[in-house]
Image 1 (tube, rainbow, N blue to C red):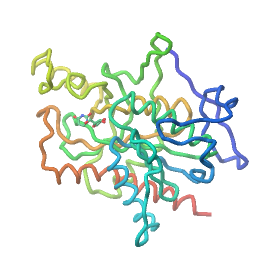
Image 2: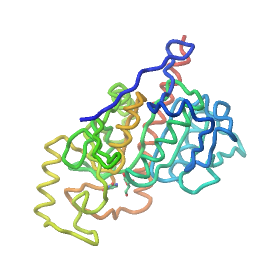
Image 3: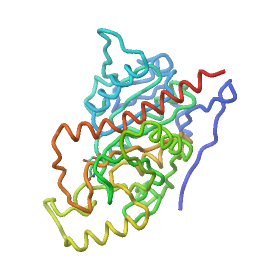
Image 4: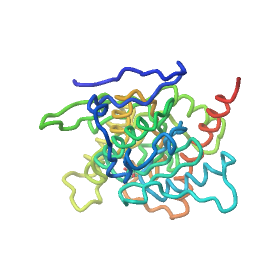
Length: 313
Ligand code: R2B
Ligand code: URA
């Protein structure tokens, strides 16, 4: 199994952990064009724009990440009448990016390929900006296994469709397998935050990451279906026995890529339905909107606690 970690580079302050991509070619590049962000090191001052970032929250939808930014602005006391949070990536419609104080919010679209591209450019952005001590958190949605809809799952291990904690990608025509590495301490702190909020059921468990929403997640309601209800139930029960609490489409690449660059990373997803009970997401719109705010509330509490602890002498 090929898996990679990187040396932890220290900044001037020895407690600082600088963001460091593992690619040695970057050092020799005069300019770096982050094409899918519509940002370039020759036309944008990355340290001035992003140097103070400590938390990067990522999620599928641009509108959800914008709403999260507005919510964080209020929570951090940084909101004021007429305040605007423009999309930093307005030169492209591939991804959307917003910033308030030390919190950067970026959309990643649906699935592993879209998220992988975003992560490459995000980690290079944080490196060019000379950011240190950054934590990445994915806030997303998922299908639960045996959980009440609206439950929040903090991921212990991101696993693939055969329940292994790995992420596989073809590199130069050959499969390369990365270990998925989530930060245990951040996950525990998030669980502690959930117990303080006591607003919705929250569990720590494994998250299965798939490359498809329909057959890839054992659904019976796609355009294709090559198995029976019984086969589906057997597979989901096997997943449950392997500690899988929810299913989504990005956790493994997030855990593998951030983990390989030694960036502490966590995944917090709300469950929109119980997959043992059905496949269609048919709850009323306002119920789904409230569910999707749950990871945001939890992560906001975590960020505020971290910032308060950092201010303490
Ligand atoms: C959860 O929801 C999306 C699919 O509807 C996908 O991005 C995911 O992981
Ligand atoms: N997102 C997924 O990937 N699966 C679900 O069932 C719900 C949301």
